[in-house]
Amino acid sequence: MNRRLSLPILVVIIAALVAVFVSTSGGSTKKVQPAGSSISLTQTSVGRTLADANGRTLYQFASDKPGVSTLSAAGRAVWPPFTATARPRATGGAAAGLIGTVSATGQVTYNGHPLYYFVGDKSPGQLSGQGLNEFGARWYVLSSSGSAITSAAKSAAPAAPASTGSGSGAAYGY
View (cartoon, rainbow, N blue to C red):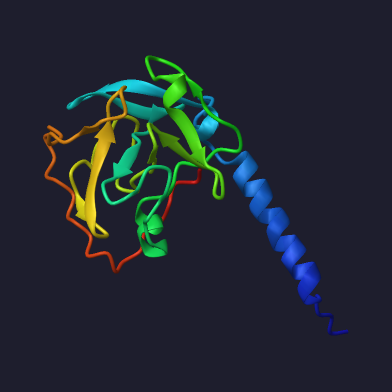
């Protein structure tokens, strides 16, 4: 007898296998905080800069207006917005009074600057996006006062190549 699985049953089986694989695969036992749970300062090669709860560097786009993101959809693929369902807590020297959100999108702001991640940053404290000129303006990290830090990041590795603005990138799983 020739039996075929229906498409919905096949999809359920594949989803179950993926779920089992993901839940049983090895990985770090380090607890990862929800990225939007806090904003703090972390020590970097350009001084103390804003970071999320997991130490990921946060950037501002020089073209943005106070409380308004002007970044294109293509830009958001490379520079994912830092979003939160509730206002993040200020920790480690960040100022609670400077934290806000863009109400329509849930994007977090600091001193009015919408905040972003850079997909080229692979680990906490990394500054691969510092000073890049992408999608029409420069990208900078922020100080505790919410001012852009415009000095170049010091690193042993060569700087990441600038994007032409036409490519796409994979965002963090935030």
